[in-house]
Image (tube, rainbow, N blue to C red):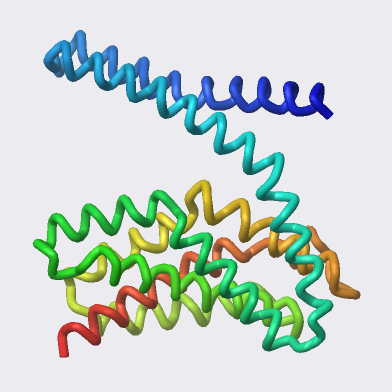
Length: 236
């Protein structure tokens, strides 16, 4: 077990290093050719890059060693609840909790709060995005149970997005689409993907490769709709 953990940690460290190194090199090249930032700022950047690499390594190690297996196990056991509505509700609650803990969502909410001068409050935006993800995950589970094609659900979802885009205030449109993007962060995606694979593998007649995916795509529609509805409601 310890050998497996060491191997996983080494592999994760290598992958994170390959991911962080290019942006670090690119910034250093810009620094000594075009930008010429103050030396203390460059030093803070390098220190931050090291901290990011360490943090990502620990997070991805924990995600692969614990989050993914737990999410898949929860997904596999949810259908045992018997009632479709109940296990869709539980899946939605898991999606809500994962989104509230998502760092990307909090960064977006902080930036929007600052730029809007508090007009779009940080807690309100976080809750709206999390509710959008929760409803999307619940509907994604329902889609698998009743065997609705993913393409049909995606078409209906984006049709709703287009309709709401014509009604929502213009200042909420870019925020809503960014809200859909930040829900594909490192906290939400592993749990939702593992949850979907677990649910599909536990249901008879369902394929984990065919029905276990698509959750993240659907989950990104929910926040877009939720933020647009928030904008329509706030403008009344």
